[in-house]
Length: 236
Image (cartoon, rainbow, N blue to C red; front, side, top):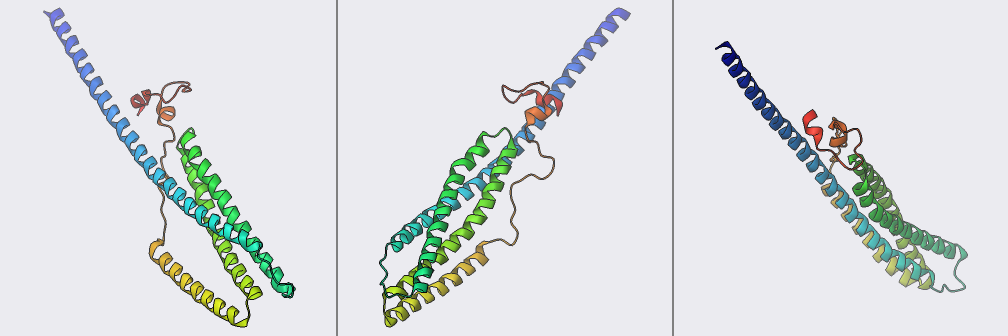
């Protein structure tokens, strides 16, 4: 009887241990699923940020390419020989600055569009996504400044070429129209910026308790050269 009782107790202990192991495995799997889903959602937010920067670069590149073409055609304008040398120098300086600034915007935005998403996609972990977005954000701010500078230089070279080619009446007429357009444009840009630009911007960057690579951080494999291990769930 004692042997039978001991055998039955041993069997119940094994069954209880099996149930505990199964329940523990289910809990670990649930934790792994939660962490994986959270990081997947955070990467989706970061992907939306990359798409936003690519859209901005595309618009800047298109408009800057158009302005660079106009500036190139302006250089070939024949200025009368009796034109003031100072006016000619200012005209060439403004035209060169407009062409150079807009070409710089086109080249840099094109490179960011080509290499930024590739850096984020082919990186080893999520830190490459953060680095790509950080670089794209810096380039966006810089290219917006160069774009505005090139736009101002283009308007300046247009006004200067009008002053060099037209008489006094034509100069007053064209410069007055240009002046009103510039004032109206500046007012609209300021109003749109105040309405659409938030006072404080936020990103999808995780500042605390980040997990770059779940398999490498929690996994039990010594080398994960073949990919991310699925054994990390047992170590959560």
